[in-house]
Length: 414
Image 1 (cartoon, one colour):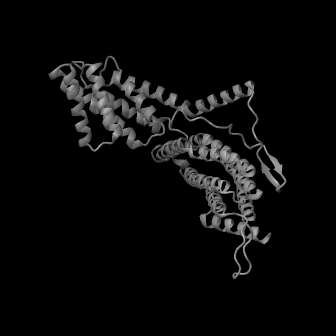
Image 2: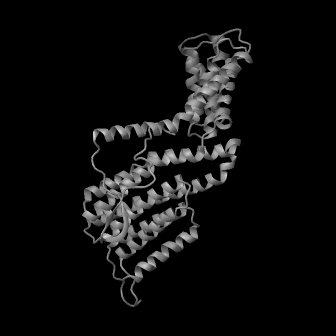
């Protein structure tokens, strides 16, 4: 999990709201005012607290791993100065945070290969520039022979350089140093998976906070830009959605780590079923955000082409933003997201009203209130709503039925 990820908003139970005349029952989010100095300080403290909750477990895992490896190396491996074992254990714990077990094992094997190459060759050839190059070549060749990935090759070569230049081999050790490092790495993996494993659901919820916050802000900006027909603001909202990549990557990496924890850690086996629900929600949330980005792109085109866009469309976008926030709040509170589903149904009905009713006479052309790009954008909003309904735990076929019925209700009002 990247350490640079920060929450875009405070993860409160609900969003502030206001009512709009277009739909009397729409609960909409109030536009944010510039932050004062005190508010900025409070927001900074919330961000620091969020980071501490997210990475505090990493500090505990690293401390426990270093303690255990020092004790094992000193008492069982007869190493009078245990350095490599605790160092490797801490490095493995840090690297494994948000990583997959395969990549973590590659990292450990790479470190061990680098140490082994240095310890085996340097006593015969000594220390020098060509000796360092020879050690690196051998370490990488062995890594390639093992069909290792990029992390294995990098760690093998980098550790070989470190050992060849900074840490020459120590003679008269009863156990080679690469064995010491391998034991430390295995202990680091064991601590991360078995002794103090991450909490899968909490990890996903904290990683989802910045993604949801930024996505909701971008959708709110899009709704305002569509209502005011401001092409610059529409492009800004589209760029905001395009820039969600780092948050999506962090969330997917956290999901992979959480799935491996519930697979390998006995302390987390009981959370397999609940994590399966969260995993489905994350995947469908990602799909819905892709649809939202496509919707923003088509709306930007519609505004540039001066196509008509009724006010119901911007209200539907605001309702979609509210539903994303409500879905995260319900999942954090372990509640049934009934409000989210109702908001999504209303969003689909609103966009149907913006599109216009179906022609009753099949021989007559369909009269739309939207242009070509607007019609495509309306379809993308329906797709996003369908994915969010599935993310809320609804059966995919039922989600399709809800979206279709909401569209039919919009037709009946026209």
